[in-house]
Image 1: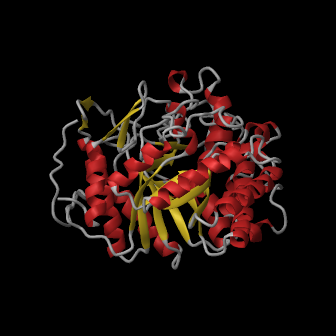
Image 2: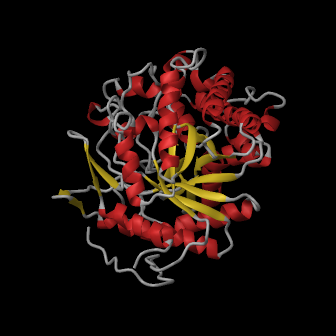
Image 3: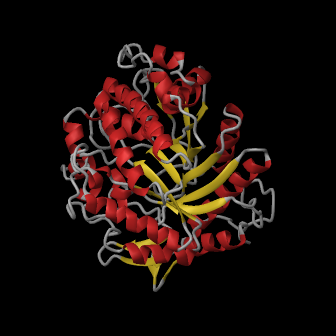
Length: 479
């Protein structure tokens, strides 16, 4: 791929600006998830998660890869923390593995698991890095899935119990908590399309999971407010920036926006599920799993909203005759992540694309941030994930990932432009700190600003990592 990626000082039409200064207090760091990096899947009392089971099932993950070893972060903690400090990261968003704390998702606490996260938090604080703890990043204890998983209301209550355990153990040192990461993926990819663990392909199950994840969030926020009243509390959503095409474009956009975005922002931030979502999915479920009082539990005040953004989507109503396009950016696994909207198709978009096949659209990030600022005035935003996978090559001690630097430059520019337009954006966490297990894609996709040789576990800071370090040091987009 050949691109003209020379930066401009300001207001370039392609978002390749340089020298833009971020406001005082704007937090810049990176993020990871437990199952993707920790390894040590059966060590020190950790129980199996749905991703252990899913990835060990033939045909579910590219290359037959699993997270059993991942990048061995569990055993290389101090060295990885030193790397974060070397890059000058101001914040690190990590997730806590529920089965490392409660091996079966309920009952006895695994003290060795709590001790690991205690060492992680202490190590971050000792290096001047702000810990941001995510309580759930998809690794549901397998025992809970065997009892019904997120289709069952009881799982939400077990999550609240787990939240209390972790908050009581780490709350004196962790200033920022995120309840759930991308519940859309947990529900619709895990229970609808089958692309993610646990691999079910049932539209009603997906919608039940949506509600019980929302309920789990509300219950967890109540626990956090009680146990760590001074902490900041948030949730992270992966927003779909949806654009329409052709006749009926507005209806296609509305339907996908309801499933992708408003199924969460409605109850979380407005206090009720959107009426059009209920109507669109009426042929899939009657929503009888929503009980009186649930809306009030879910609708809890937040200190900020976590925003994950990677690309945009283009949709139109399917004519029912031509081959249906399904380029929604998610791996196909037999089911649909769009229950009730199977007559909407997702169009392939123009490049350039990342190695995931996702289009590169920094304007989509600016559009999203401004839209959220207008929809939810007074609610601060933090970009909790943004980054790109490319096919990196190691040459000696260097990874010259020019395309990733260009991607980050353009998206940091988009974030800066949103701030200039009045958006209350408080921080930006690059995904991902390390190359890692990329879910159903195994080890075939690399998002890290630090390269990992999976055979030797050797870490090499990529040029993008050095670029981010320069950005952090000057709090300005490097020239």
